[in-house]
Image 1 (tube, one colour):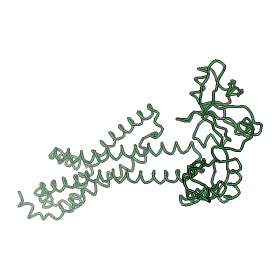
Image 2 (image 1 turned 30 degrees about the horizontal axis):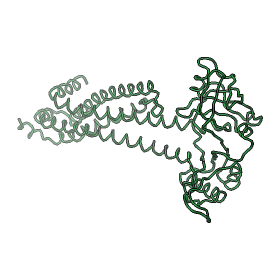
Image 3 (image 1 turned 180 degrees about the vertical axis):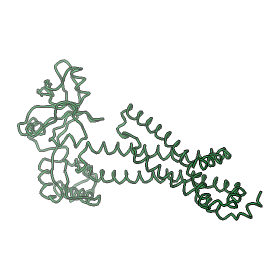
Length: 407
């Protein structure tokens, strides 16, 4: 075994330049595969994380502008959703509508502590409003069913607003005034761009005099599993509200609809396609290196025709020659492949560090796990054996007499 290893090393040293160039191609292919896999994993993790914070089985509806004339009515009409639409949607779409919740919002509000104040907006929501917006509670709690039932004057502030109002002091439990009405801070939330404060829907409705107008309806869906079914549910909502508000159901500008169910399915499909595409690109790049290994082994066999002939003449078994050629190929691919793995993992760790420091939500933990490293290792060994197979078979076709003449 020691002699075999020494022979393999001697052959590699004899063709230093070709071995180095071919090895670089293998290393580059593996390096690129590892980096691409880590980046794709980071993107998929980021998308999964963002969607996990949201209610992915819902469709949100807001009033828009009707741009098509309908039943004698003119175009460019504002479509205003009303509270009775909640029951209407539930009654006419029981097949997919599991829970329907309204929301009231305002972009103008002043919140003060008596000493400091901020201007911004607020939302009147149900307990499901937190996940619907993709927000997270960092301190205290969110609006609950008791707050809704008792119409409590409680408020959940964005972390930046809480810091502006209270500085380093604890905000939860403190009193604030919003439009001259007192509210108790019950929680602090975090969100990238939404800084509107949350208060119970029933409280807002009570304070606004019990009007009918609402800004948004969230329909949580059930019993649908495909994009086609999700699209049909969306069209059914246009049909239902079109009859109530007298607009053409095909007028997509009449409502502003966000189909989070379809978005989630599309994202899942895109993640799978991205992963497959990355593997294909990486493997094709690595294949170019494997072809280079096969070529250098063909050259090696041609240059060693006399040596192989002598070995055959003195009784060397074909299997031993076959084994040496294949092992030389495996040695090149494995050695340089692991170099590519090491550098690829190092770059993946660097990307992970940069994303963590930069708090990049769209890319999280772009690392390569052990299973991927093992898969790449298996691919390396098999590729190396395959690269050496054809040159090895060619070496067995060399006749000892002809090889001895070939100096």
